Image 1 (spheres, helix red, strand yellow):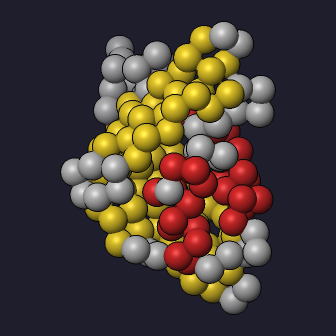
Image 2: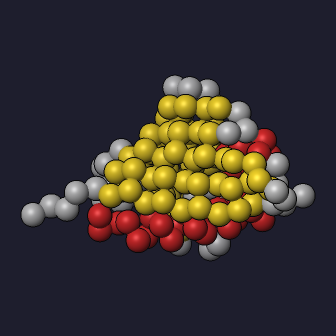
Length: 143
C-alpha cells in the first residue's frame, strides 16, 4: 500500500530583517548562493520570475549531473510570506507546495517553512535539505 504524502516543517531564527530574508528567496543572484545549492555542486542556472503565477528554475550540477528544481509562485507578501508549487523531476513526479512564513522577533525573524505533499519515503531527505538551506540562508542574510 502506498503511503500518504506528508507535511515537512522546519523552523529557525535568523538575525536579519524580514525584507532581507524575503528578498533572498526572489533575487536570483542572492538565491543562487543558497536555495537548492549543495556544498559540492555548482549552481549553473537560477531563473526567477518573482510574481504570483511567475516561475523559477534552479539547476545545481552535482558530480556532473544536473538536478533541476522548478516551481510556480502561488502567493507573495513582501517581507512576510511566500508560497510556491514545487517539483524536482529527478526525484519525483509529484508537485508539492512550500509555504514560508517570516515573522519579526527581537534580533531578527522566525522563519517557518512548511512543505506539503512530500512523498513519505522522501520526507527525511526533504527535512534535512531544508534545514541545510535555511542555515545557508542565515549565513547569506547576516548583516
